[in-house]
Image (tube, rainbow, N blue to C red; front, side, top):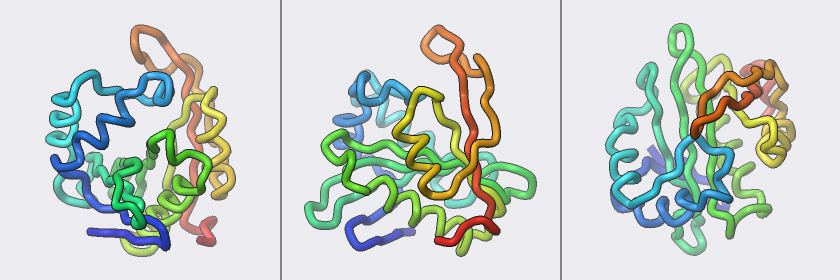
Length: 177
């Protein structure tokens, strides 16, 4: 499976991507809102080994890398969690290398993934779980039409502390592409 936009190629993650993924994912400051920050290259290898090999498997995470077509560089990744009743829902998460922030790449990648999930895989609802302090991600999903559904107080235990979680969602009937 490959998804293409004018500037990007999204394809399944592979072991060949491990160095590029480690380079941006291991930066603790850039990824302070992420639930997973690898400390060594082998952490990325384990991560890649655990992600689903098949698309649209119920209760699994499928990971795509985001490649800038002009340079051929892996500039980020996009995770899709297939879940919900009858596997009709999906959770999205996106991580970009800091060098590619504020260029519209996250929006472009997310829009393509959302179109694919609604139009090709017939999903009913797509949601995102976001740290309330992550204003960039909140702005991203709000610009795409997601609405805030919930703010859970101290609902996640990450790095030895309880943190809040906000859920934003979008129904297929609300998506205009």
